[in-house]
Length: 227
Image (cartoon, rainbow, N blue to C red; front, side, top):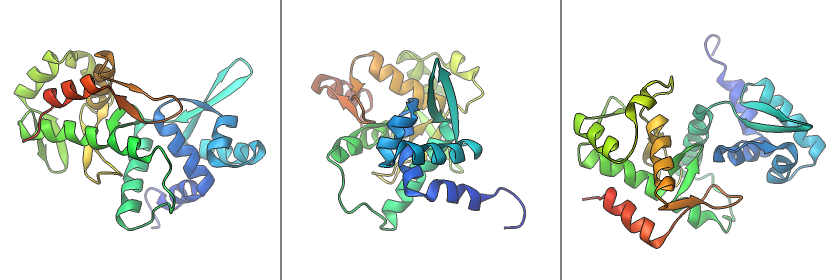
């Protein structure tokens, strides 16, 4: 490709195993220190600093300073969407880790993808909205119907506030574990926030996994039923 976006440079940045591990660790939406990211990547702090400088120069990472400490985060939710899609593609074409980690089942059921719900429960949420015609899908995009707007408002989400954001209200993200889309965008983030606010689920420490309580899962499935 002689003109247009340089996907080769992007692929080179993401393609290094240590950098890929750092980026996926930041899909939690939290900012992490260089030391924490070095541990995630399995490299020394000096090596991690070199990788982080490259990711920052490539505009994939932003740095926040708090006193003497520096914390790194993804520059936007679109980076997480790209990573989730790449993970789904890797799973589809057979590029899998030979030894899945112990947290893999929990991550497959429910996890955070930057700031929205992913995994089986994230896919269920979107499927339910589409089946009940609360959302419509057309030309690869999803949007709320009028009845969907009423449903979301009744669920406790302020659509007027979300509409003031420059971020898209609704978009899909290909789920790497289910290999079907889940709901992203500002609405996806608001949905996850509301689920946590209701006490149905909470983030597990030092993990992207979302843990539903037994009662919370029943309420979630009742709120988002499937045919």
